Length: 130
Ligand code: THU
Image (tube, rainbow, N blue to C red; front, side):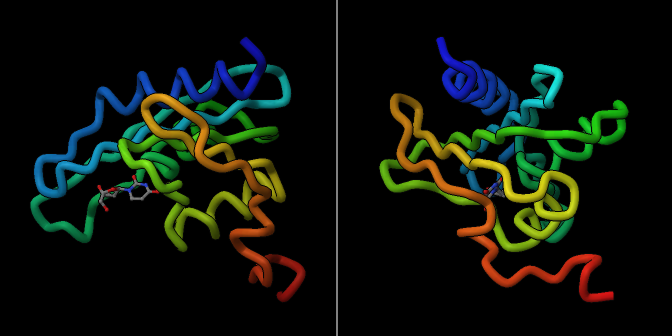
């Protein structure tokens, strides 16, 4: 398995742990650090709806909290034929901490898209604007 296959497998596994009773839409994400550590996350919903946290954000905040600072790749898995990309707020957070990393989108059985974060967030607000 190459590094993106490993990451997609980790995201699929994380998706199994999704807490998504309201939408029924289970998502898994996995980040790979420059040192090869894989940190995964699943979406965690809340009855308030608005406090729901996406899989990408769970993976990113877990990794940051564990002290990881350098990331090379993220994989996102959902049960959909069309690619499921990170939402806007997740793109912003990923940009802040990961920069222009490759984003691999996958279904339960296949990779559906592979693109750079800069393609998803082409004109970002970041520290350079401050
Ligand atoms: N969701 C994610 O976890 N990541 C995405 O990229 C898109 C949406 C979650 C949030 C919510 O729990 C459910 O999917 C439906 O929006």
